[in-house]
Image 1 (spheres, rainbow, N blue to C red):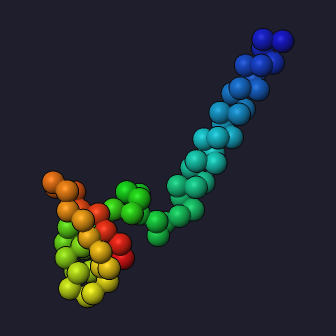
Image 2: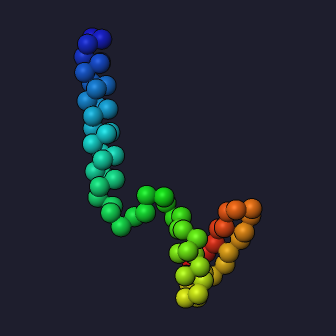
Length: 65
């Protein structure tokens, strides 16, 4: 029974890893940092009028496009 459980757990782990790799590879346009952009990208979007609202707290800027 213990051997069967170990095999089952290994297969579950393999399936989860495969799903994670598929998700990682399948979304090339999605930024790996989430919704973060660089400061220069932020300034460009400000110049283009794409930033609706921005909040500066220390060295962190958050906003709404």
